[in-house]
Amino acid sequence: MSLDTQWMGRTRLLVGDAGIEKLHNANVLIVGLGGVGSYAAEAICRAGVGNITIVDGDTVDTTNRNRQLPALKSTEGLSKVVLMHERLLDINPQCNITMLNQFMKIEDMKALVLDGKFDYVVDAIDSITPKLTLISTCVFNNIRIISSMGAGGKFDPTQILVQDISSSYNCNLAHYVRKRLRKYGIRSGVKVVFSTELAEVSSLMITDGSNFKRSAFGTISYMPAVFGLTCASVVVRELLDKKVKFNKVDRPEQFLAKK
Image (tube, rainbow, N blue to C red; front, side, top):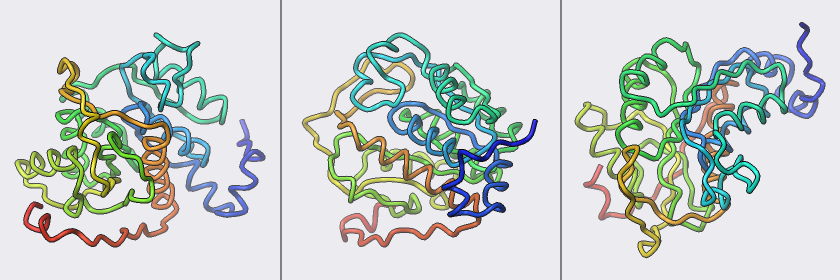
């Protein structure tokens, strides 16, 4: 079957035939299809990446409709990964999509990353333990990864940055990830998307602790989407060998000793 790239005409104008081929041959893993991961997955697919693995064991809940791409009244109770699989194939029927409808255990996560021969990994997990497993496995095996920090409790997309995790601040999730990664001997070398905006503490909700998640912040429609699209931009740019420059960070003095 010949490759149909007519739908990518505007992309070809920007990246050329060589760029189209690079993206088509690339292999990307996206773990987590919530507000961040669903938008990242769609943007990566629309960019023309030809091999995508999507992972999520959750179903659409009514509370997802304010921020998650596959979440509609009509899709409540349905599998997120199945919905995204259908959606991505409707964008690019020639995309090779692998879907894993499961919450990954530590050993399964490691096996997936090590066996998958991925060119890039998107970490859109919002639970600490599986997030650490994914990040550390990629770091120790020299697999490129972009990790999303917390989009909850925040309003201002202009404060979203791409940086090394050692330079992140004003993000509770990044704080815990940095702290736990130090136990693996990892202090830097992980690209992250985070926001310097202080979270609205009053929006914090304590959860039942299922799926490694003990709390969650309130969210607004566009913030997780911008996080996800920013993650996708890093993936696509680096697959096209375009160097991703870190945003300049004027880190407040009180955070300099908290790396």
